[in-house]
Image (cartoon, rainbow, N blue to C red):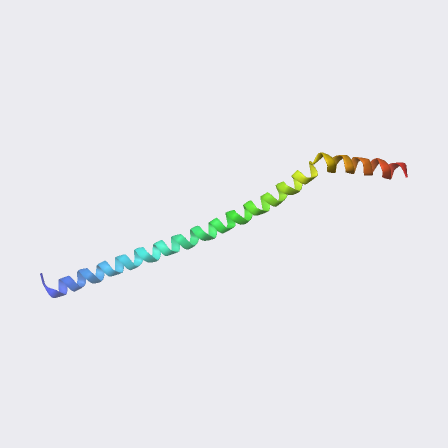
Length: 74
């Protein structure tokens, strides 16, 4: 084989591998950004569920009902 052919093939190989590595890095960054969005949505949903669960506590419900009746009597 000629030296120029070897150099040309190695250059093409280097370019293809560089493009593949850049594509993998970009895909990883996009994946991390999407996972961050999902995590923030899960965190917000968990906060809302915790708030709703607090309101569904029997002690809280009966306290609010009792306070409502007390405020109506006054």
